[in-house]
Image 1 (tube, rainbow, N blue to C red):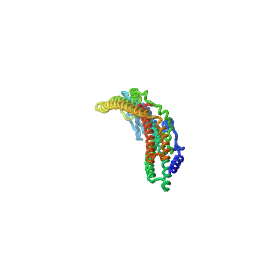
Image 2 (cartoon, helix red, strand yellow; image 1 turned 60 degrees about the horizontal axis):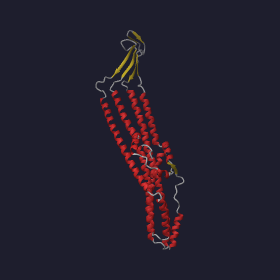
Image 3 (cartoon, rainbow, N blue to C red; image 1 turned 60 degrees about the vertical axis):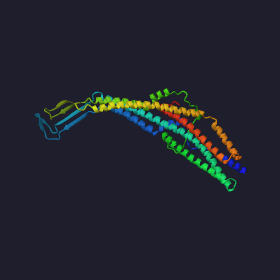
Length: 422
């Protein structure tokens, strides 16, 4: 009987392939991914057009109002006399040219508003870049560690599937009890279900990643990761006060909010200037329709600021300044707490990572080889064997999850600081 078990396990181990990444996968490092992201991401490209549009708004704000011209020509073809002078057919004509002159520096104030809007558009670009870059990096590392876990599942699934196939032949011969095959089949179903969940997580992350880098191929992503570099990362030189100051000075969402305060102030200055009426000056000529022929006149017009002095819009602008100052203060509070929370999470993830014995997993791999050998010799039962496979699978999954959590915490810290500090 023992010879049957030795043959079965030996067959499963020798025939189990090493699970490898597909040869047609897209192998990519994080640096290459970021280059493709900046070059190909459609959201960033669209935002660049918004930047150009905001610059064009500055040009528009600098332009002077166009002069207006009015021309009058009679349709009467009958010669007539005007002011004791004969006027021939189509003799009466008049025209007027007018130019609006903006007072109180309205045009300069409009240019200032356009410049601040352009500045905000720039900040919006870099804020979008910060958020999308964070998604890119977190998806990249999530794919890497999920694929490592998937490899373990696929190795166990292949081994179990071959083992079950071999056992079923021995059941028919009466050498193996049916209950052992059922136990293996139950464990295989569990593995297949969990593998499917991992594949879905990988698919979600790959979809996000491929959209970000603008890749439309059907090739799966295979991240190229130097885990030694990841393992050498540490938080020893990072101080909360320094990180908070860096975030407050450098985060573009705060710069946007600060610029919004300046925009509200610029709008208040504009609204106050609008209380001053503009002047329209012009020249008027009338050949025969006035008290004398060839009439020339200078025209000046303006509205009288008696009822409407733009009081409502000025009040609105004043309150917008107060509101935006509060939003800015709230942003500062949010940044301070974001950095504190991110640093605490990163430190906890790092602490847990450092408590892990780096030789634990290699030792575990050797141990499972010993368990298989003992199972061949019938020194362990099938239940003990499957329990150890379950423990091995869970251990690999937890270690990969721990490593991923650590890197995700580091990336989150980079994100909230607004700068790569790790």
